[in-house]
Length: 182
Ligand SMILES: [Zn+2]
Image 1 (cartoon, rainbow, N blue to C red):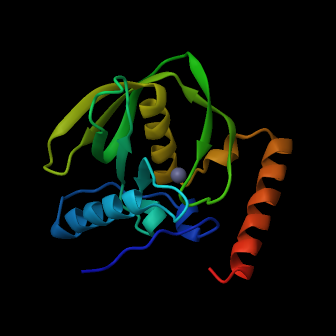
Image 2 (spheres, helix red, strand yellow):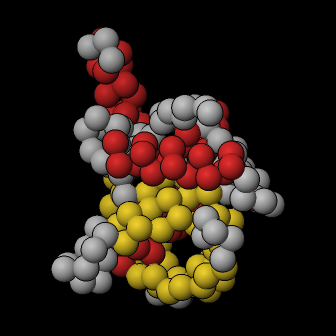
């Protein structure tokens, strides 16, 4: 089966809307395994805590997450596979987040306004439906990944001046990476 690869901004898949999964086929199971592999592998400078299908050039509504030390620092990592995730409730209370993205290497930025608490409905890889509440980093990560499925990038939220300096910094990092032959 196909080997997937992480794509970097401005790859066109990152601006497309992913489509709902209607059946969990072998192809979808393979995509999930590939996404987990790529998330844990990261982009050479950091490993990921979340990944959306658009980031591996696939347009299925699938996200994977493994948010470290959520709620309880002694708890195991919080691994999630979410198919067709949907935010069914969001708090009015917002939080300012500082974010990074495997598809936007070398840079990070904020403030990105996110709902402080959300309830998300999704299907797992066995086709079972779940609804769960999230806050803190977990809620932040879910909102970031669902945005990817809709073609939205976290830097879209930055105030204009900050966004322009963010893009200049990113483009410079991309040029330097090219020069280094990566
Ligand atoms: Zn991302």
